[in-house]
Length: 112
Length: 114
Image (cartoon, rainbow over all chains, first blue to last red; front, side, top):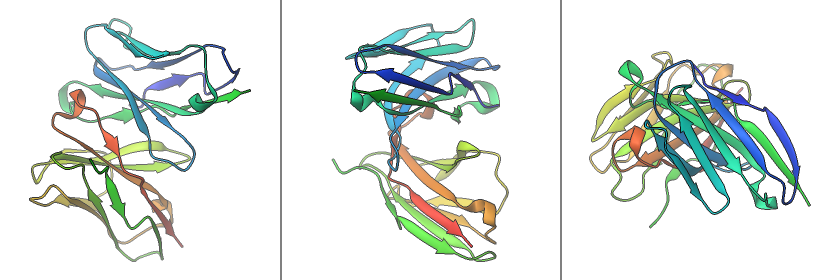
């Protein structure tokens, strides 16, 4: 089952912050975050493994709440280059192990 | 290191035909996954190959098949094309275990079925 991302779209001014959420009804083994710009391939941002860890680099970080099966991507002090569609990909256990199921995407637009 | 390459980049076919898409992973990567991306359904997992063996499969009909060669290059085949097969087909490579490794995506093959 596809994870649910929220919000579907967000518009920011440069320097503003945003949070994108990804929720699953399944017990998750890992969550992957990607950004895709129009006409380009998805670009990897980070992986979070079961264990509730938080990761980050530069001004983009993410957390994984294992109890809620939810991950959040935090973008702080947004830049124009952050514009794009953000996807979370989830890997569940059992027969779904090794398969990534992607959310529908969140369109992020950053204006000057 | 060269990135993931896919050929062809664009393809136009008619209903009923078949098509073969090719993917060359990053050197040293043994896992290749294929995805279909459409505006309506988003990114959907097709299958994953590791060391020439299909390790995982998504929920697509048997018309969609793939294989991987000893040099890790992979091909995807779609037989008896339908209009709904029009999509961007992406392949991604990683070094090993899908859930724990970074996947690097290729630029995709855009298929249009008329």
